[in-house]
Figure (cartoon, rainbow, N blue to C red):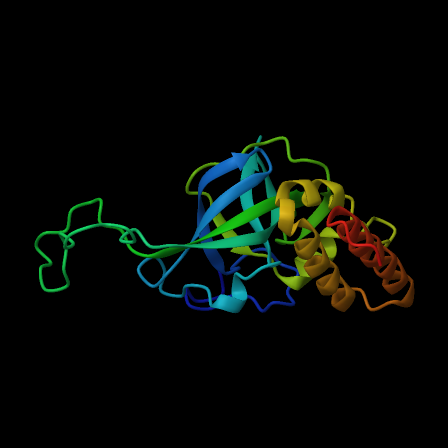
Amino acid sequence: MSSLSSNEHRDSSSNHVDDCLAVGSIVNSNSHMDYTVEIFNESDRDRPPERDECGFGQPVFIRKTIGGNDYLIIGVIYDTQLVDPDQGRSGPRLAQENQPQFTPGYVEERTTLAGVALLGIAEVTDDETIETPSHKMPRWTLSVDDVVKQCPDGVTRAFHSGEDGSLQIAYIERLLDVAGPLGAEVTLAIIERLQELFPDEVHQRVLSVVEKNVRWQSSIDRGVMR
């Protein structure tokens, strides 16, 4: 049993994957690498995520058991959309606050949807950390109602660390393709986060080069020469 209460979660710098904040659940997919997540609100969880805990560029993960082994499918939030089911409806609602006895199932709450692009996978160890991170395309599909959790900075760092301590970011081209018009921006958001997590000079130089390449490619795609 977890040593943390239901209202407590590991801090953002942790390198453990247990007791992480649940931010939402999968409601559909656009492709094998692109999923739509409904963000939890007060009616779903006692402790729903704050805006800064499920914002643009936030790393997330889904835990799956495959063949008896636990894995993390790691992704990033690259887009959000507000949904109001009453927008455009004509006439009064069938369910009102003063009429709790009649609430048809098709009356839904306003909600926030997030687009999540998958980045890769990692194995979960017995001590609830990760090992053997891979930035290859995950082979397994996710499922509707799979819970999406906030990925702590320690896990994000481990996911981007090679066996020799080197920095690895092998998913960029795929992320740029999946995230479309927002691909460059979400990639730059990840790079900014990694610049904080990898302060060593050698890693900073690598990230600086990657950042310049992404900005240059983005300017070319928009027809802007700098």
